[in-house]
Image (cartoon, rainbow, N blue to C red; front, side, top):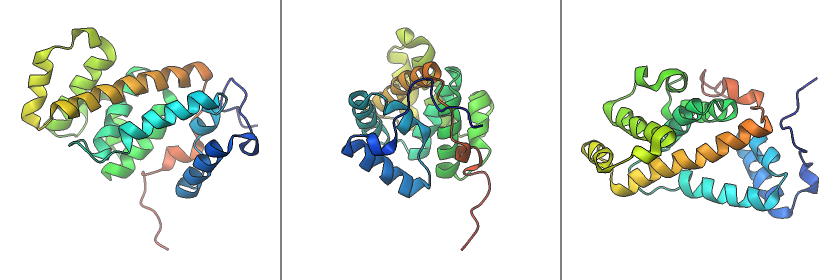
Length: 195
């Protein structure tokens, strides 16, 4: 028997408001499955909408110098610090795909300080982890340390906002007992078969 994806009731797709159902079906068409987070958070539709809107504002924009892979790297490193299995597994899969490096997500999740990443990404994760664990200690010196690596003040805001947003996400996933989809575990680890 497959364990439940959440401690809370998970609504049936057919019973969801039209806007939620439409977005979930779009994700399913693109990914080939419905990530459990979409269904687990649909328990509270108004919060689901706010969550997805902020998620998209942070991760789907093309402005700034952060790559999609770097955004995912922040999520994996900070989610690991927050002991969030769902986010480490799901975003680790996305990180593997964006970076085209099957090992980097595991390295970042286990110990980002020993990961095979360039100094720019190391500086980015140093700051993200400070925001994650000691945000009250952030000062001007932290901003100054990022600038030589090409990060603008807006990029630094993005690093902090992604870290903060996924702090919320990690806590919700942990409290609800959100289970990662089995599909995430293999994504990006081996090349896709050519058809």
